[in-house]
Amino acid sequence: MVDVEFIKQFEGGYGLATAEIMYHMPDHHHLLQTFVWQQYDHAPEFPVLFKFLDFWEREIEGPLHSVKVGYRQLITPTEWHAAKSIELFH
Image (cartoon, rainbow, N blue to C red; front, side, top):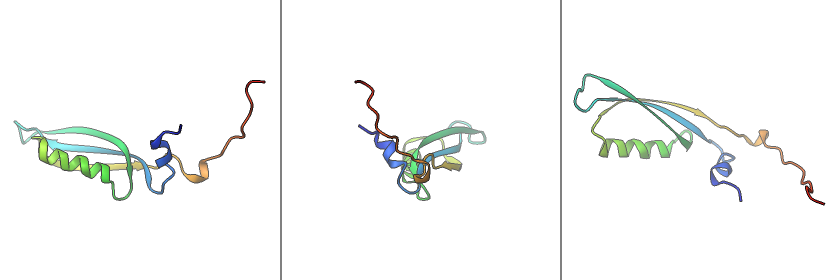
């Protein structure tokens, strides 16, 4: 059985997204803290990231300051090569 995340990597724009989230400390708003988030997502819409950021704004006390996003498509169709099936046991 093939992993669903592996299959999704063949879809256009789907890959590993990394976000550096800077937010204000809840008790000390003049201080900033960094949180790194990483997940498979679909560029350029980033629905998984935006769902997480919506959750953050609703549930987390530290207000968001800024978000930087990095993205890398890990496997592209031109990099995929099917191996020949071989019989391992005789």
